[in-house]
Length: 283
Ligand code: PAF
Picture 1 (cartoon, helix red, strand yellow):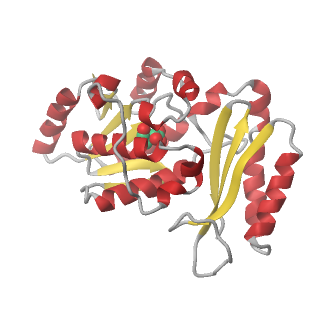
Picture 2 (cartoon, helix red, strand yellow; picture 1 turned 120 degrees about the horizontal axis):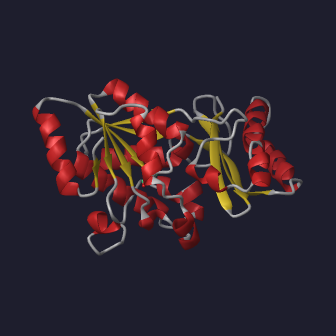
């Protein structure tokens, strides 16, 4: 399996595949790969000739320097895992910060029609400018036919779709279902940093989401929010940052339910110093 660290090298390899009319699926990641990522890679391989997996901990999308410093970096282990899926149809692109940013590690500024100001955008200032900057660069370098993103970062997925629409980037964005541990905890690279007591407590997040979904059938969004806040206020270990019900199109919190709209519940929780997010379809 080839592991590229320079954009010029991977661009040459990609041109070679394109000359043979082969299709490319891109799976952008920050590494510390888990089963959820592997599902994205498998999907990319089922729909394309080759899968490019980018592994890059993107500094400009971290609002918290400590989170950036502590983010797991496990390239050798990631490559070993990818080899279990395919030896010859996956390419890894693991660039350096210099290769991606050329000495100027700053984000472009984007207008995502307001999607960037909701939820994660409120709590992680500049985060989506960082994500938009790096994903746009990956699209430029790899020029994939399709690109795969998990629904765990539902807002990110919506923003990438908006990026592609606004900049008329010729790539098909494929959203993929959330992959969960047996206990319901949404898979995330950050889970490896959970201390045992928090790991044990964290499945509570999905339990709450499932119950919120049940309640949303008969109760108002406001009442469901109140209930969730109360449940977390009684929890000794997990600290709720936000829970809200939003319209999947605008990501704006719902005021009054309409049966013409599709809603999802979104949650962010601190388990010690690890921030976990999750979401669930409601109707
Ligand atoms: O979802 C992630 O891992 C990152 O935000 C992404 C899309 C790879 C951009 O750095």
